[in-house]
Image 1 (cartoon, rainbow, N blue to C red):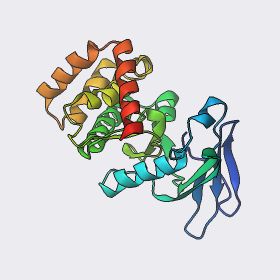
Image 2 (cartoon, rainbow, N blue to C red):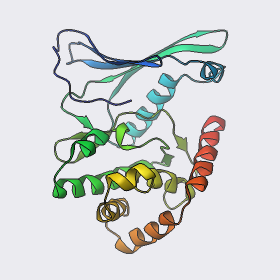
Image 3 (cartoon, rainbow, N blue to C red):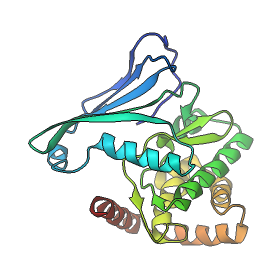
Image 4 (cartoon, one colour):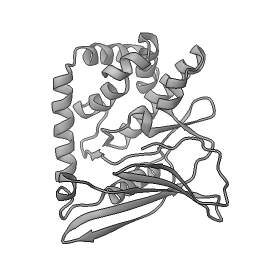
Length: 241
């Protein structure tokens, strides 16, 4: 779920998005406002919440962990969940309002100049490296879950799933999950040119072009089926750990 610039009255609450599974609201506050995201599990998803953390609690913990480690993230303010019989019927997360930002997916789809797009690709790769340097694999750090402020200042705004590895993530199979999602999935192949994807990998390797080239070769050979299997395994680890 994303946060986008909206012309609203900062003194009045407003519903920014709503469907059967979620609602996003702006809530006025003395600090300038908060964003409240409320999730409503439906169908089999309700059964999957039995005696496990709610989505809001997971997202709060994940964003807080990344933010404490120095990764740019929206500030977390709190969470709550409504449970009955061990199941989560709804949960909500409150974060700071970032009114001057737009999600990266929307920015790319609106169209930006070539120079700015190259900077965005490099910054996106650098953000992934920051996340992985904390020992975390996002599994959900797609452009819609990243906010853009200014020309190319990026920050994480949604993080419902995350795998924390004691052995680290940089250079391991977990890192390839996020990198493939960021630059080599079917949608990303349409959004980024080859040069922009390469610059994204250079941003990830902190300018090491040889390492970026090795990453390119490995990710370009990766099949979508293998990627789905690896992501499924990572999500399973997230539930177990």
